[in-house]
Image (cartoon, rainbow, N blue to C red; front, top):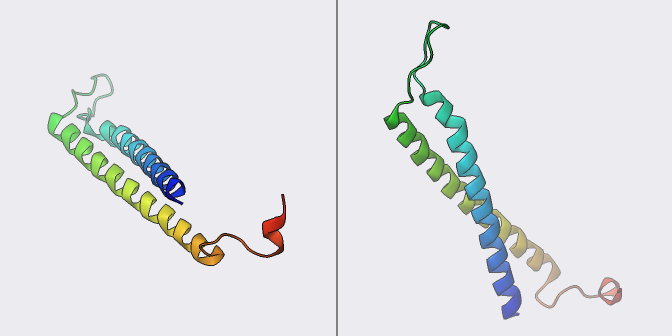
Length: 100
C-alpha cells in the first residue's frame, strides 16, 4: 500500500511539474513578443524590447505555471480519490477481478 502511495505521489508531482513548466514556458514565449517597441514606419526596424515589460511577462508566466501545476495536482488527486471511492479500498471484486 505504501509503495502505491509513493508511486502516486511521485507521478502526480512529475505530472504537475511538467504541466506547470510547459505552461510557464509557453506563456513567456507568447507574451514576450508584445514587449517590442512598435514602429509605424515599415522601413524602420522596431526598437529594442522593454526590460520592464519582459520582467512583468516572466513574473506573470511563472505565476500561471505555478497555478496550473497546482490545479493539475488537485484534479489528478481528485480523480484518483473518486476512482478509489467507487472501486473500494480492497480493489475490484466480483467476476471482473478474477480475469487475467
